[in-house]
Image (cartoon, rainbow, N blue to C red; front, side):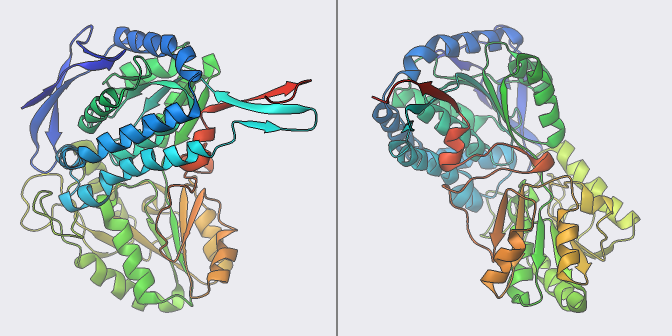
Length: 477
């Protein structure tokens, strides 16, 4: 049993004011393998006070100093990449191939990218007789999730450091161990005392108190829409900035001229990646009605080729368990809801895959003959479950794609890139992926509607941490 019972506050590892040890469970075995301590209001007060005290000096540092700091963090992160991947796999169930290929390296990418962005970012801009200064917003509170833990920490911590902000991080209490390693990396890189602080805890105690703290100038939250509403409500009385990256029910429009094998098969594999636990997963696939049988056949074959395996033994392309018991039960309930509401179960269904008798493993599942008003088409399932919805014409496909409370991501598949761009322009989502394009860490990521507000990644992510000051009657130095 590994113990990580301390918090990182003001450049030191300190004991909690009121220790509340809890066990971290491996979702593949349902057995605890580590312990952390949950924090209290007193721990948050200490961390926020440290961040507040450190802010004036850190805000005044040079761009090059902060860029070099990010370089050192990236180097330290690179050195511990394997360890980070192993902890991510153990705590949230990602197969080791995915942990090594994406879950851990994506964090490294954000630190390296932000260092480049920072060195080229115009913090002052001359106007006609006046100028603009962009300055760090202040003390920031971060609440991060369990599904892509290293990614979500990095795409908040990196721009905060780049901007000159100080911060308090509350990682998910389900998957906190990589955050502890990140704290060690930042310490070794020489991040000044108080700039970065970490307090473990649950949402109702630490998360809510941090969100409402009067000395916190900004909250950045990634998680469910339900929890995001609670963060915003807690933050409202202090009128702080709130940036949110929330849930999604992303449409994947397969146009009639798309390569059906590539579009459908790729869509299934993208949906199943990370056991479907990605907020931008292409969970609603819209298919031409006259190609229904072909599309369903391709989807069935693709889903049945997805192997479900123990994380440490998984081959490339296989998926692991759902990350925790509560989420596993939600996935099971929604699969049953789809059956009850009359959708056609193409493959998969409730229960564990054959040969797995313990662990939170779900079966790769595909539903066809889904209508856009069914529960499985409306709610974010956050598991390896794809719903296929027929459409009669392009207008109908776009209308149904936009008929959702979410707007994080969308996908368009077409043999004509120009046509795909026209469709993309009409979808209400923060990011649209055309023909399976890969991610770009300089491109903004964030949502419309109840998928949140603000943007992360690249220069757009940096700007979330900046205040805009107009200086009149003087020229920039």
